Image 1: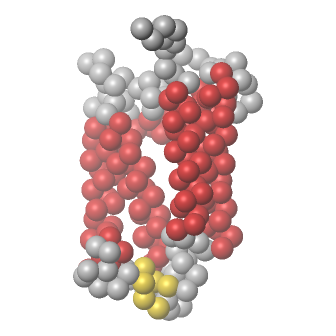
Image 2: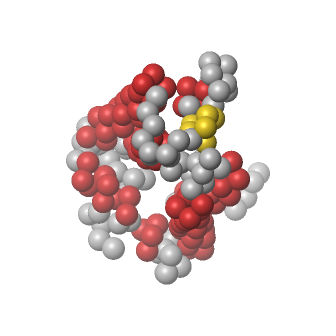
Length: 187
């Protein structure tokens, strides 16, 4: 892989500072929320329920989190509008920080074209930790999307448990592979 391809980890701002990690997370969580909101409006986020984001995010102190699903398009003016505004706000806020250091196209390309994914087939890229991390990330994302598409279980707690355990392990192993070697002595 060439050295001129920016990765989310190695992206640098114009001043030489790294891109704030929260900017990447804001964009990714915002896009994920938008996807869930659109699926929910069309009745595809859960097989039997329509999700009230206000009820879900306030742990049902404002209203019930799960209502009965109806066929076709279903939009709650207050709940869905606020949730969509929060997701769009996260995306805009994250992209503003990312655009201070690099353009959006390079950032998106860096998510897919980087040394993490090449480690899927080559342990020499970053060692065993990066290879294991890449496989955990891939399996976590594939499992989440497969289960969501196959069983309409985009908001299933069990699916989150499995997917997030794999994704978090992959993220940790990927970053562990980037830690410089230290001193063997502890004293």
